[in-house]
Length: 115
Length: 108
Image (cartoon, rainbow over all chains, first blue to last red; front, top):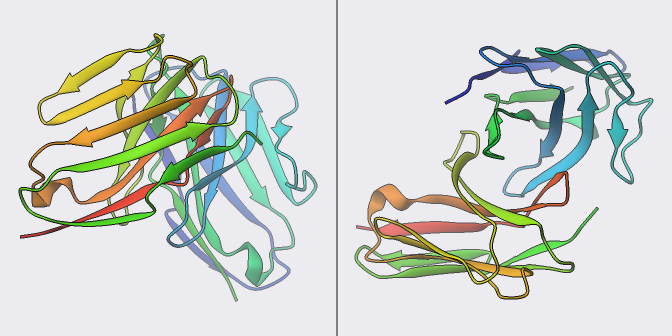
């Protein structure tokens, strides 16, 4: 199947700093990528839809100035958590469609811990 | 976002017993997908259902899509310890919304 790579897998940062997470489609082009957040023992919550060459579409309740998304190429989308606070600590995971099957391929996820 | 509800939240079964999880959407879906997530891992695609009333089988797994395309179910026959994980239905509204998930634990 298609491969989506996410980096870093784990990051620990101090409160007030910004953290960038990268999501790459390795063997296909992704015009759209989806960013999810998952708290422990909970489901994946869609944060935003990343669109190559245009602005991301954010879900209700997700602060676009807090979670900056850049999809500058067909194989790379980035999520920047700005001025991170402990409540932003979570598992962030990206995904993309490949081909026409509709199947979502997921990155390995990034576990963010804000101290 | 769109609401996709799943029950039960947890299910503990003895190995060999059957398991079913149910998914309901507040609105009609164009299609529905099912994923499995193991602890510490990312979701892995199982299947996609598109047609009203569709039934698909994968070995011991049976997936159904309701006639109104608002509900779906996943049934596992004779569970094995390798079935442990959380099963999510995902509603496609041109964006993909995850159901609340059902965590399956199988006791050997």
